[in-house]
Image 1: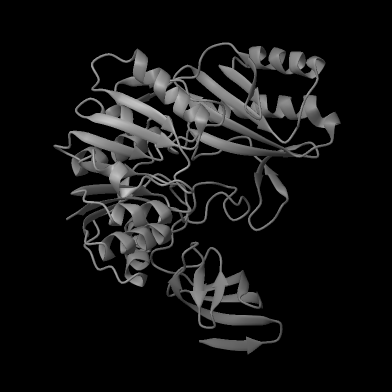
Image 2: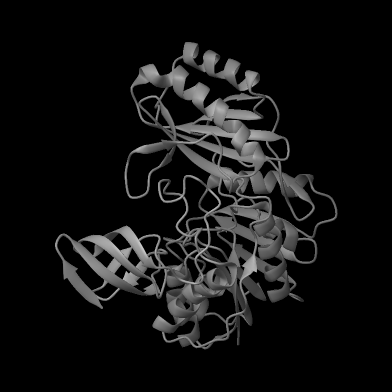
Length: 407
């Protein structure tokens, strides 16, 4: 219900939207509000800004971070745990339903663990931090409570890099990854840098005890090889490589993948990356990994060759968006795993739907594109037998999931 008063609008929030905003009739999207709340807001078009909270929801709790509502990193810190879990699981249920897929969805699995092990800090005009909510301005942070402690320690190093490179006059992104052997840092946006700058940056890397420092993938100095562990195998990923957001998510997702593929003898690991799942699966079955990211595939191949006690595992560079595996290429496998980027795997799903595979497991960070790809597989004769949402992006509107298909 909307009532106009002078320059403000009184609203009743009806539901939570996909991005975590409260949604009133209109629709009007108002960040940091909850269903059932009566509020006053400044409204422009479909966007509202909370001005006064007249009737709070019984599910409203106090946010744990003083930067919440200013920093754009978190959308939901003000919602009680049971309601939060129901909302996030509901994102998966709704996405599947919109594609006409009715399947039981398991309870949400919490995979936050110690916190995020990857963060991209922005450096602009003497500031280092995260973007403000719905703004290009930066908010400087002394610490972020959703990051692992090691990343918070890396904030000081990031500020030192920004100061050293400020004279370049370029906006920078500083990607920090916490690994078993120390922080891995990849600086992006500087372009090519001269030898003098490389030397200064290498000195800073030593001062802050970084494992490795790179400039957009070009290694400036590697003091120790950064190491992550997939299953029982140690891998040194290339600079800026894709990893699951939390170490706990690696474990939770891998367990679900292994459960879905139990008994398989030969598995095609599509969008394999550095081997997040493939190296763990190779403990019990033959694995052939495919990915367009050549440095990631090289890291997977190197780790597989050094590992002991694995079944055969191969790694092939291939763009599955433009050259998906065809039905005859899939014939040697008795199961397939696919874990594409947010855009999903539409082209590959069409080929999978035409195959004779008995089992397929899909991992996705985007329920909408997963639902689209799942509908393709279902139309090809597969049944989606199980979907499990996994929460490694705590306090955000993002949710991971694992789906198991069979025919």
